[in-house]
Length: 275
Image 1 (cartoon, one colour):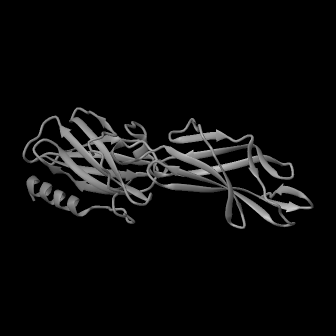
Image 2 (tube, helix red, strand yellow):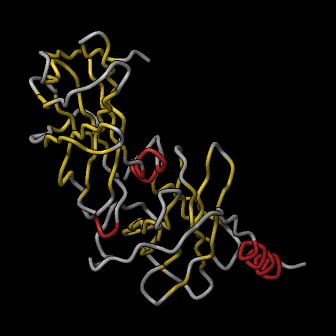
Image 3 (cartoon, one colour):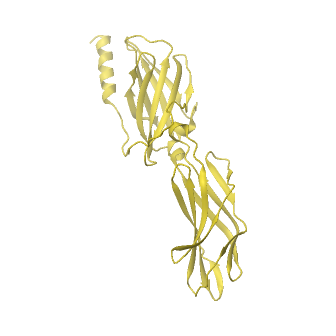
């Protein structure tokens, strides 16, 4: 079999090997232009490239689209977009050529440690593998650690509280909010509102807004120390309970919740439950 036939067979096999990732839901639609570049760079073989994610309606993955402009191009040249995880290929696609650039999209489940490559092939069958986003040479770390970058959650810890017979006061604690780092069109997601809800018999009887959350050391992480936050407490009987919850609304409309603690009334005193 001559080299041209070998190369044609290799391309056909590459088109069949699409190691897709299951669980994809409909992509989230956005009005922002998709040209927002989340990763870009160059190599001796590529004059430029971009990696742009489109998030799904659930946070279990994203579609990553590659555009790559080669330094030169012949009619027989081809390019493949390949993604590996822990050294194993998890997804690949033969890119389309529009006369100016290569384009290819891959659906990736949420995972940390992805490595992104472009493999260029010429008419003689030779191949060049170009890393475009890897842990050793990161261009966009959010796409490498996709699972962590898609996460959004809130946590609240109440270290101490006091009760004067009618008012519950949080003496020490922390509210922590993590917003997603992979978004459509480079959208920046922020906390629009953070509330502490006090509930009695599963009904909200009081609420306090937490403002001025500050950026923590990690990307997308916001925190606020809780001290001196007070709630009026209704008359209670022994063994009745109060529950405190955090409710955070993000700018993308997602609402995050987290339990903050439980207090029970016993012998005229309000005590915080442990564990």
